[in-house]
Length: 471
Image (cartoon, rainbow, N blue to C red; front, side, top):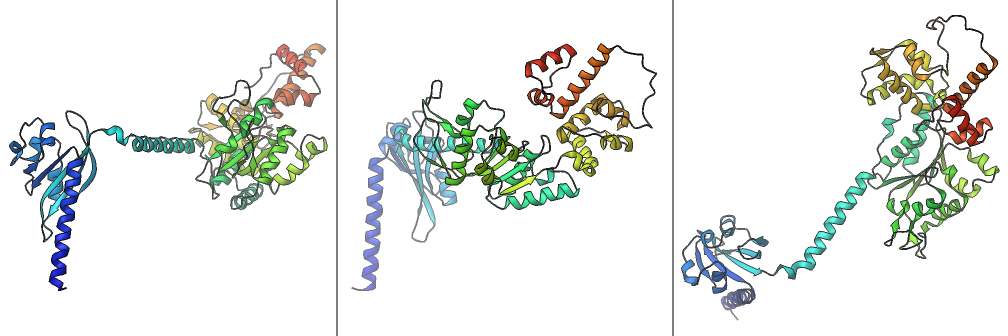
């Protein structure tokens, strides 16, 4: 066979294929229209003509496509030479799913365009549209959840250049590059939760969720469900659809367990299984779920003492304390007071500054509430002061009677009148309770334990002395 014969045969087959494809689409579509290079209609089938109110299709020939088909984009296809393979076009009757293709001559020049109205019954697309909308909703929900569960702090938020602070940041940065559990130890208000956020943000899980749960803030009966989630109808009052726990929400990210020293013993054994076997079962379910979370725990409790008392599992402690970080109290990092004070006042959007006397007075306080207490003192002083520079007297007033003023600024007082035994005892009781409350950061239960009183007895004494429980 000659080359010219093969070429002719190729062209003939190509023409037949194009004609066959055109006939198949034209017969199965809701309408077909062809325009020339000026976007004037050269042919339209009867079905399409009737849809746009024409009784005779020949009437449309020679007219601009837009005058017959409002909203047509065939002119755009002719001008650009690019097809519009799938589009929605509104019509007076119903919306149409349409396809528009350019028509080229043998030299490749655009000489017109053809449009097919594929179908008008959009319910045939409903499974696809429903799946698409479902995926969009799921994606939006996931993005919203991640935004709500993003860690808020980085290492730059942990203010301090003292040796103690630098050592904490060094160990925390090192832990961020590992997957082992981290145990943050220290008094309340020292910044343990801030460090947990920072470790997550510096880790490979930074783009995943950061989920926190406070073991001391949730009733023991609900803590397991909050932690592991519940199966549908697991117990009376449970959600019929089930409820995901914090472990599932944190999947792929970091779970921060605050005040883990207060976690009940039965739940401690289940947490140990999560750490060792990387799996758990929701409450009321036999389904075993694989867990992929980085665990960071924190506590202000002496866990070694709790182990001796039988209140904390030794095996869980050893599993958690792979990377222990002791966060020092503020009284052990007083060199950081100026920088911390400036950062807190800036965060409060305050223009106040501290003079030397005020800073010196801050250094004399024991800070039982640590940085949380420092923030409280500075905020109170800034609100009460009429001056932009805070002095020792204003700081003393904000702290209360827990420390004495330096002699240079100590106010002169007259010799006190002799008081009765009852008044002296009342004054002593009030000062002792207020001091212990501050040391326990306002926790009445811990204060009662510290004073050796029953909780109800302490409440009665506080009411009699006019001491208000802090919120």
